[in-house]
Image 1 (cartoon, rainbow, N blue to C red):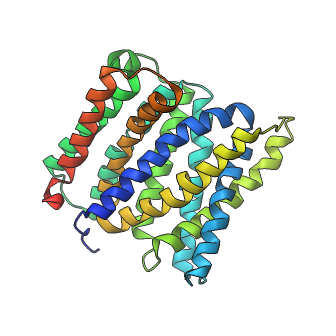
Image 2: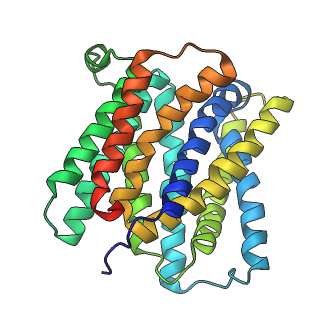
Length: 299
């Protein structure tokens, strides 16, 4: 197993932009979820991503038939990061508020770090653990608006369980991206995994529509799906994969704690929501935690 490469400014910019895209996707997804059934909306989103990704990979000559190992790896990426994550994520949000769901999802860097260390059989580094915990706490401060105790006081129910399963699916996707698709470019791996995931989501749409759920997307929903597909999936998944391949899954997933920070920022800029002091303090904690965990490679 090769050692992760040094953290470069290009990788940092791509991962920060990825988190910004995902932060904006929360705002777009909020509107789409009120207009369309979940599997139908997710399928539309990933169709907007899969088609340009496959076309771009073909034009670059990278859409060659993968090996058996790579084919299995990209299928597992599609099953975990696209199908299962969306299944559990939307299922969890049906039972609990988005803020509490985001707080649970913020556990993914901790679980990814522990999983990677267990696979590699390497000891935990206190600097990395401190950075992960600091960024996790900062994300929690942003999400809960400073009322962390109140958020943790609620009982654990079905929604929390489904959201935790979504975390496990994303951790699996991140680890698989690191170890199962070696020899593939980030574009090719993302294109194939997005294709498999889209097909899995599309297979569930007839069962969803059979329940009599009306589909009436408005123009803003189409714009939102296009944004989530092109920016929040095509570009973001490619850059996230590049990060995992370059600096490893544990450090890459740590950047995702920036997602709620960007979500709050965009809510202030686009929706006119007030900017709270807790958001500023939490955002600073997230940035400090990410920097601390990556300090050695930045230096």
